[in-house]
Length: 476
Image (spheres, rainbow, N blue to C red):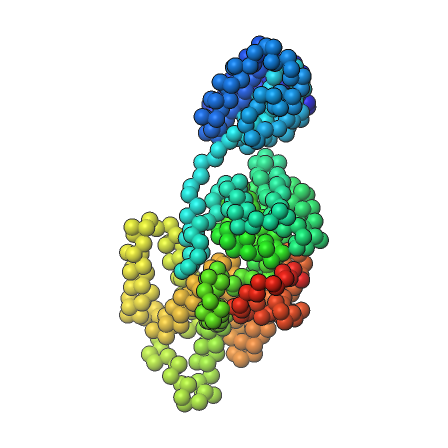
C-alpha cells in the first residue's frame, strides 16, 4: 500500500493497521499547517517532548502563502523542517515500521509521501562497566540495550571514514534492528557477504532471546559439539579492537553486547587486561590464566586416573591417595560436586546482593565441613573440585566454560570405566571436537595453530609490543 495524496484516505489505512482506540500509548494529533489538514503520529515514551513541542509550534507559524511553495513532501522538508534526522517514505508498511520503532510520522494533505521525523528517545541505563568483564585498568564504559548508543560507543573509538555500520531488520513481527559493523578495506568481503545473506534470509517471527535467537539462526551447530562459535562482549573497547583487526561486530537492539565474528578458540582466551599493561606483565597474565583454565579440563580426571593406579605410582607421588575413604565412590562424589557447583552458581544469580555473602557462607559450610562430617564426601574430592571451580572463573566466556565442563565429565566417565585408555580416548575425543569445529566464516577453529601462522600465533599466545608501522593482518 502507498501513501495517498488525500490525507483522510491515508489516515483510514493507518487506523486499519494500528489499534488506535485500544492502545493508550499510540497518539494521533490533528494539526493545521498553513491551512492544510495534517496528522502527526507519536508513541508515548519514545518521543522527545521538548523537540516535538518546538516543532509543532514552528509548524503552526507557517502561513498559507508559504505553504504554497511546498509542492511535495521533500519541498516541505527543505523549506520548513529544521530537525536533523528527517526523511520521506511512500510505502505504508515501511512507514509503520519506522513509527513502531519510535519515529514521529507526519502526513499532509496533498503529499504522496509521509514525513518521518526521527525524534525518538529510548529509556536507557548508563554505560557503566560490565559486571562480567571488569578490568584492573582501562575504560569503564559498556554497551547498553540501545543499538544507537552502542554504535556511537564504537564510532567514538574508530574515527576511520571506512568504518561502516549497516542496519537490517530481522523478525517478521518484532522487526528487531541488527547492525553489522566493520571496516570496509580490511574486512573479509566473502565472510561479510555470507553474513549479510544469512541475516536477510532469516525467517523468524521474533528474536525473543535477542542475540541467542540470532546466533541459532546464523550458525550451523552440531548438537554434540559444545564449543562456541561466537564470542560475545559487553565492552566497546574489545569490540572496536576486533573490528580494527578485520573482524565483524554484530549489534542487536535490546541487547547490551556485541557478537564478534569469526571467533576461534584462541579469541576466547584473550582478555582486555592483557593489553592495558606492559608486554611482560600482560604476557605473564595471559600465560598464567590460560594454563590454569586449560588445566580444568583434565585436573579431576587425571587425579581419578592416578588414585585408580596407586600401585603403579612412585612413592613420592602417593600423597594424592584418599587418606580416609568412605563408602561413596570418588567418581560419584566428583559428579555430584560438578552439579553442586552449578546449583550454587544458579542460586547466586537469583540471590539479592544483600544476601549474597550469606549464601556464600552457607554454600561453603554445606560443601565443606558439614558434607565431610556427614560422610558424603572426602576432603580430597572437595579440594580438587574447588580448584577447578575457582580456575574456571579465570575465563569470562560462559559457553567455553561449559564446553570444558562437558569434556571434563566425559573424560571422568571414560577414565572410570576404561582406566588409562579411557583417559587417553577422552583427551583425543576432546581434541577432535575442537579441531573439527568451524567458525562462522567456515575457517579452522584452531587457527593460527591449524593451519599454522607464525605471526598470528605469537600475537595470540604472547603479549608482544605493538609496532606503530605494523600492518593489520586479516585472520584467515
